[in-house]
Length: 253
Ligand SMILES: [Zn+2]
Ligand SMILES: [Zn+2]
Image (cartoon, rainbow, N blue to C red; front, side, top):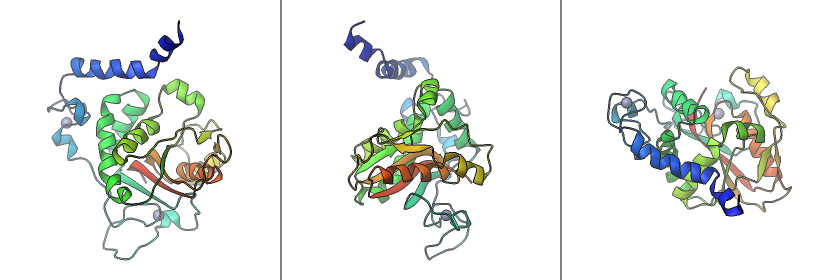
């Protein structure tokens, strides 16, 4: 096989073929309820199911972005943050990780349901663009997958979402600044302290001090306690980032 054929036979070609196939093979039907019309550009989520989206709106924790019920006028820190030093300056999420969102993200990540991508990318972009567009951010970095997991899953969902956000904001995306040095098992069944201990040393700068004070937006699909994004943000600071904020599609509790 010649070099250019090798290059073309990778993910790019697979994705292009997949996109073309989706447009022809998939009927324009909502992939959640199967009962309403929904097009490829809408990520196959119809209007009725769209009403299940819960955007994160104020008031929320100043630091970790956890939404809060009630009227709070002043900036505040939530219990999730009490006594915790995060590696990022602040974290925000587009929507609440309710059952519908977790189902979509699970199918996107683990079952290659890439047709949901326009829907997920749109949620992130419409919430993140207004506050980020006017602020001086330099670079977008996705939370990396361990190379073994990347091979199993074939794609890093955070990197794909980061690239979508990069296009919307007109910012470069660098997926090679930090890497995941530890293979961590799925965190969902672990307690909060267990999660934090599990990921503390999970990330490292790939090439040492590669950054020179750049202000970085760290992107992931879901944030729960913030342990993973915080550990990754610390590695970014070690790599030379001047400031790190976090944006995720969904926020769990
Ligand atoms: Zn539907
Ligand atoms: Zn908080």
